[in-house]
Image 1 (cartoon, rainbow, N blue to C red):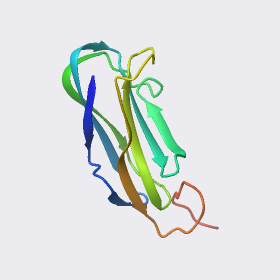
Image 2: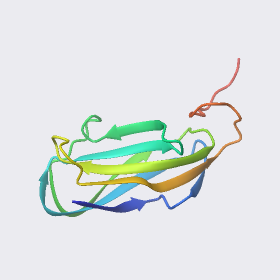
Image 3: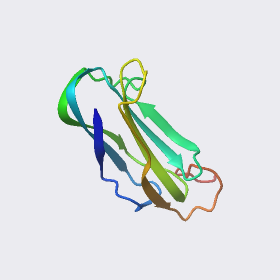
Image 4: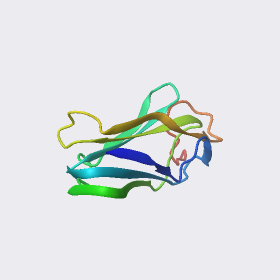
Length: 128
């Protein structure tokens, strides 16, 4: 199985904190793959993991896939602090024994934020 790319995310796409993000993984499987697992990980430039999920643990398991297709993950809002981030995507068999394909540090984007706090998150908040 080959992962063909991401839509709605181009190299160094500038986003504002709190914007939505859609990660779409296009795949091509030359033969049937039973219950593949797709992974999406968001990391900072220094490698720190900000978010990690997969179709198995999030209850979105797929049945058998074959041929060309796509799966997407929608973030309603991405409350990250300003900086450079990477989206990593991968596809694995149901037993996690190897990777069909994995894209590491291929897709990057920049979050622009007026928040000067420290940390990875920049969620909406207020002092009372």
